[in-house]
Image (cartoon, rainbow, N blue to C red; front, side, top):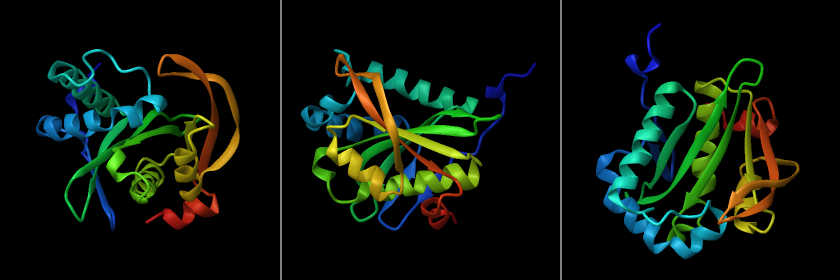
Length: 198
């Protein structure tokens, strides 16, 4: 049996009015480490606990290798978000846990640098990923989860048309503690999703 890694997959670049998304590469390290480092206290309450070497180049290499492997296997696509006006890296968004068969689903996670928060850039990025998931990957359902206290994330998901479906108890271990999460979802034939399709 041939390994999936022997086959080339097209590497998407998603272009929008205010942001562009592309897969990260080796040259992105300095911009990524600067943005993540200066945004650490802003991001830590909403993310898995940072490892001691979180921002080291060796950890970056491991991260990129994982991104590449998951993309080749078709289980995830991790994008960096660039603001069109400045050309600067503003954050990241991942469509992960992609499953086909009877599910045809994926799960979205994202982060944004503190200085770029509150400007609607993540909503724009989320809409690009949604369009890619439904139109190109032919998924039927996209899910996202957020801690109920994360008002910014709740607003992003709701502005992008996601609907809250319930509360997942003790769902993810965030910053060293188990937290409940709201579950949000968008279905391919939801009216909000239809307006995003190309």
